[in-house]
Picture 1: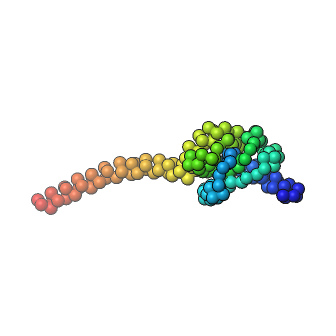
Picture 2: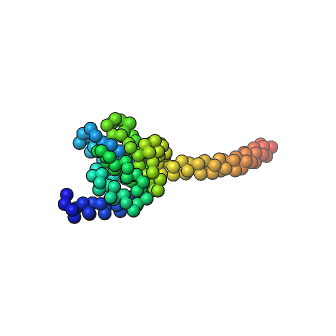
Picture 3: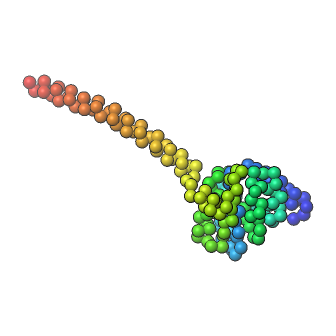
Length: 172
């Protein structure tokens, strides 16, 4: 990379760090190209991105962002995983790290909060935004269904009583 490309890369990465929901920094020493491509495709499927950047350039890109506190994580062979959704990148990275011991999560950031490896794992354990929406919708619909059943039950019982009286009158 020449100077202009480096400057452009740092600017692009800085803008990304400013708007992203979560950033995960991990050590990837020993991963094969196929494993790295697998991680990238899994991350892309969840709306995230994986980048390998020089540590010096990543530290420069972090300056002036909310995630500036995680600059000390960039030592050795590190990669950056990020997503707009604060749960996607940590979840995919954590799931991949469980299946592959060569990917070691070092930490990350969510907004202004710097996270250690355990913080990223805790964030990954949270349900995704779609899962939360589904649970919330289920909770909202369940009481409505019960209310409809309770309200409809007396009306159905009254209808049966009237039908019984009508049959009784017809028989008489």
